[in-house]
Image (cartoon, rainbow, N blue to C red):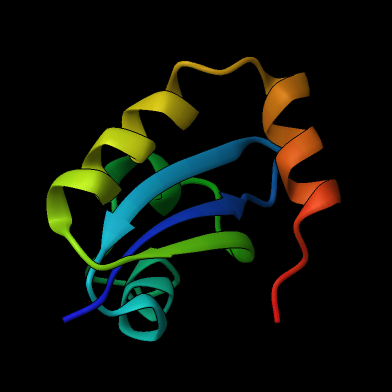
Length: 85
């Protein structure tokens, strides 16, 4: 099973970082009326701007916390330098 860490750009231009094992389903959930994170519910629509794939959940979770600890400038640098394929 694959595990993903992702960054969303919200409608208010803030960035949201999360973890999932199904990236497409999770982005749809963030934009759904009934599901998604509390933070993104008030900031829809959201757009996937970056993701990284991992083979283990523990590595993905560690990376999620690394990204969450970064400054906005550092997160924007990741988004700019690593394109979604």
